[in-house]
Length: 437
Image (cartoon, rainbow, N blue to C red):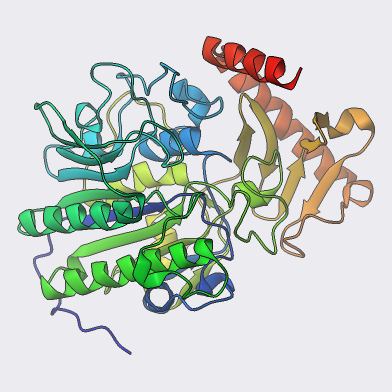
């Protein structure tokens, strides 16, 4: 079915931007990427817009991925490159970091609805101190306790309240929809950070059992239903042609979900399954319908891309790693990246170019395995196979040497950002060891 859109606007304003970020959604968990059950709204989004086959999250776990997306910088630069922020952890995104929301001010109204997970213990931890006009959401993943919903406007104290887990995604979307309605006459930027399908799953009662693959699948159906409502709302308000919608995930799937045909999953070291996730873009009249691209792109690209589309300069003196990918989205241009780096905590563990992937590290049982030290080099031709199953290192010595050089240079560049394991995690690890003893 063709979606009904408002007429083209000759005097176009800067676009509204809606970033829908799911939590732990796998590469093939939705129908456009080969999912096992129907996701009609996302399938229609793919038909009417852009699908990236080779989009990489900035990290293989939550906190660093979200830091990278919001700042356009590899997470290690932000001080949040190590693990995720836990309940007793006092780390936070430094106030010196410039977020997408801050960069788009004052031209844009900005709101974050859903999961934050970039710090929660400092007095000024709320997203409203990082450029967002409004925040309604949770401080971290919904498997962490205590869990409250916070409602805050910029410059005001937050109101704290509780909701049943089954109501969280509905609350996040409803608040985002209200923000859209309130700001329909001016450009707005929304980050709708759904906390699903992160485990445990809490699908609403009306969807329980509908996917026939368990609560995880039911949660994906809820996400798809929310996307359908979002597109319907934009159409009803006549905002379809003025709005760019991005749909993606913070990292690969955890203990459930599918990363097929990719290798590994959330938290894995160097293989794609932890980093490479769905990425759809929709902007009728600007993003060509049915476009599919294998250009390598990354979550760090959203910051400069949104600034470019909004006609806003990246703040002077700000060192970002992302590239403007508006040409990829709107004109089918090749990737502006010569390479994308994959980090596992403080370490660069893989390098991806458009054709090749070099993996330097993996996990085996309880060990982190530096593959080269074990006499095993892993070089994959990503245009020939996505599975990272058969290394060509022995037969491509020139390519191997180039990729090794890239890895060494990246590790040298980012070594100064390795500040050591945070005190909280040292204590946390000792507690775990004592429990095991």
